[in-house]
Every structure is written in C-alpha cells, then in structure tokens.
Image 1 (cartoon, rainbow, N blue to C red):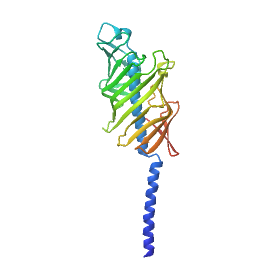
Image 2 (cartoon, one colour):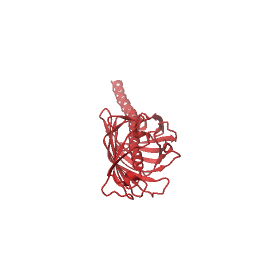
Image 3 (cartoon, one colour):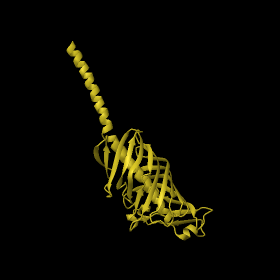
Image 4 (cartoon, rainbow, N blue to C red):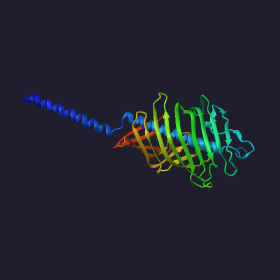
Length: 292
C-alpha cells in the first residue's frame, strides 16, 4: 500500500514537473506560432512601408504644369516599376484642390490597379491607393495622407490611414519623415486579420539611382497591434532599421518584439543584404527564419 501511495505521489510530482518544464520552455523557446507571428508582422510592416514610398514617388512625379496649370484635373505616369502592369505603365489622376497654388500645391492623386496588376517583380496589387497631398514633398511640414479602396498587395488587404509629414527642410539631401498609421488592418486570404498602429520616423537616403535608395527607420519609432490569432504585440527598436527599395523587409537593424506583454524576442535583420532572413533570439535561444 505504501509503495502504491509513494508511486502515486511520485507520478503526481513528475506530471507537475513536466508541466512546469513545458511552461518554462514555452517562455524560453521560439515556438512555431512565434515564427509565424514574426514573419507576418515583418510582411505587414513592409507592406505599409511600401505604401509610404509609393506615396512619395507619386507626389514627386507630376510636372510643374500638372501642379499649377490651368486644368483642375490632369493625368501623368510614373517610371517606378510598382506603377506598371507587367510592362505597361499605369495612368495616375491628379485633382487639384480649389486652394492649390504653385508654391503650395494641394490635391488628390489616385492610382487604380483594377482587379489585378502584376509589377515587374511579380507583386500583385488590386484596388486603389489615394494620396491626399498638401505642399511639395520636400517642403517643411508638407503632408501626404495615404488611404486605400479595397487595396490589396499579394492577396493581403491593407486598411487604415497613413499620414506622412516632412519634418526637415526642402534642401536636405536626406530628408526625414514621420509616418503615423491609425486604424491599420491587414486581412489575409483566409479572412483572418492582424491590426496595427505605428509612429515611425524615417530618413530617405538617396542612392546613385532610385533603385539604390534606402529608408532608415529611427530607433524612436514604435508599433503595436494584434496578430491573426489574437495575441498582442509591441515593437521597438534596439538599433535603426534599414530598408532597401524592392527588398520587402528590412536588411539590417535590430527590433525588439514583445508578445502578450511578457515574452521578449529580438530580431536581427542582418548586415545589409536582401536575403529575407531574420535571426531570432529568446533568452539566448537562437533561430534563423526566412520571410517569403
């Protein structure tokens, strides 16, 4: 009898110990769900960054006559490959506001990707992007408000209001912008969705050609939201993030990612190569993941 009682007590203690170890391991290791959440956050972040960049390119593209000519509405094209369907350039429309002036233009630029527009890099966009601008892109305090109408990128529907403000002077070679996302939502093809808000300050570092341009995210930037499975997350930076145009995700920098307020993960984006690989660390446990 004593032996049975002892075995029973030992079994209970063993089960408790296994449960405790499993619980600790869950907090100390990188789970499959963590990897999925991290990849989705990186993709969502890059998709909203892409909208910022496209807004800047679109606002910079119109001619002087488009901004200040006699016509209220005009059309123009953009050389950037994201504004092309296969090899055919899209036609953007510009509607000048009633109070628009040559020195301080304002209005709305609309790009319509229709039911499916594949760019030269294989990305598929649908719906419309609408850029409401006030001031020239490189003037202090100029703004562009980015919204979408049923806009999707590679099957992910992006919603929310993205407000970009130029926080430097017009003569700076590497201008700085602040981008605030409110009501951000990314809906995936299976109808699950993630939410996001962010306050990001970034610098545009011009390269020898537009394809060599870089966006450098300041460490003061932050974001938060919920994942597709309902977990909360908060993002801050341990070092500046660098994006290369057309890469998709950051190519260098370190991000701090906190899940449900207690599990801390660091994400190292590498040394500047566009390899779409992230080194993930939780309590000294390291794993490399690749974002498609």
